[in-house]
Length: 89
Image 1 (cartoon, one colour):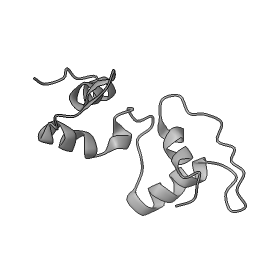
Image 2 (cartoon, one colour; image 1 turned 90 degrees about the vertical axis):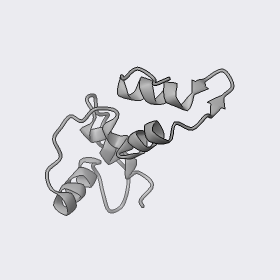
Image 3 (cartoon, rainbow, N blue to C red; image 1 turned 45 degrees about the horizontal axis):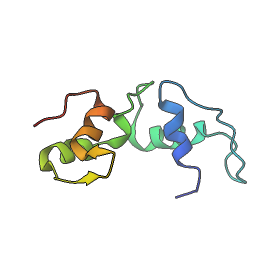
Image 4 (cartoon, one colour; image 1 turned 60 degrees about the horizontal axis):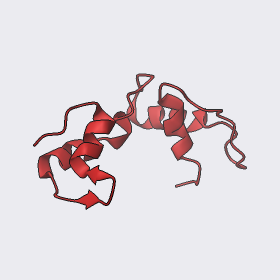
């Protein structure tokens, strides 16, 4: 994957940054969105911040791992912050 492919994700979020990128094969991050849409169909824009996580958030909620980062809270609380849903007990 090209080093700036994540910039395409940025372009479909509610507040995208400057699409200018400095690559010999791509000058705008919007080009990555166009490639994704050619491969997968239209992308409704803007997308929610949880969109970029795909199925990972649902899997984390389902698995409910008992992991904590010191001072950061549990994985469940992190998922809740990303999705805007209350953390499940």
